[in-house]
Length: 331
Ligand SMILES: NC(=O)c1ccc[n+]([C@@H]2O[C@H](COP(=O)([O-])OP(=O)(O)OC[C@H]3O[C@@H](n4cnc5c(N)ncnc54)[C@H](OP(=O)(O)O)[C@@H]3O)[C@@H](O)[C@H]2O)c1
Image (cartoon, rainbow, N blue to C red):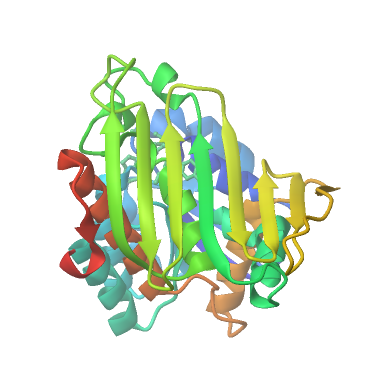
């Protein structure tokens, strides 16, 4: 059992704590810090979390093995570097950082300190994602040609103008940092590294200074292509669909896997659907982190992938400025 301190007790920090509190024998949150303490005090009292004044109070506590960072995006890089310097195992929420150089610096700091660096892309742990990966790796989908994905939601309709998420520097390229980065990570997991992106990002409806509609086309190192969409002013959706010469597989929301095969002579099979029961992705990722901290299997998302995912994000942010292709080798 590792003892962790949590920094950031907003919506997601509490979701992470709730996923393991009273359920896990691998990780327990015993201390925390947040922006305005009064907003989290009752919650911490209820969960037995010792609410401290700031991140330094967690980093200086020899009783804590690890820190989990669920703070605004622009703080991630410096906080990872500080946590590494303090020798704490690190779980960091997505987006890892906002540009490739800071991502590399944060990954290097963790490597130099010899601590685990785990990036919280919870959807990687979902059984449907793992099943699609298995279908790709086994050749069941033939040669992989293309992938599509969409993660959208209504956050833009709800953010008060003064909230950090409504600011262009915290949420560049619209839904990319809150949502689209999860699609990027699923693409990296299923398709491998990205060579080039073409992006556009528009504000058609929102009055706050972040975009509502962002689209990206990609070419992978394998030669396959992909595109993702992310909108911040619509109803929620999560969808990933992989296409190969043997058929396609689609994860639709978190409970359905659709598949359809095609024979070598082009004869299509019947579309099939398998339903999956509820699965706690946050508990799975935090326990995988705890396992990695206690000599178990390495956390399945490597720091190198975290850096590459951030480089893809930076390429998208840059590309959205003028609609021109951005090669990852130039980021
Ligand atoms: N994996 C996922 O599916 C998922 C889903 C949602 C969010 N997230 C990620 O989780 C992180 C937090 O997002 P959120 O939705 O929880 O935002 P949020 O509700 O605004 O929470 C952020 C929290 O961080 C606190 N904070 C600000 N500066 C801090 C600091 N220097 N040290 C400690 N705490 C600090 C804030 O306190 P005050 O409110 O008092 O300022 C707030 O409680 C982001 O990286 C986000 O992308 C991931």
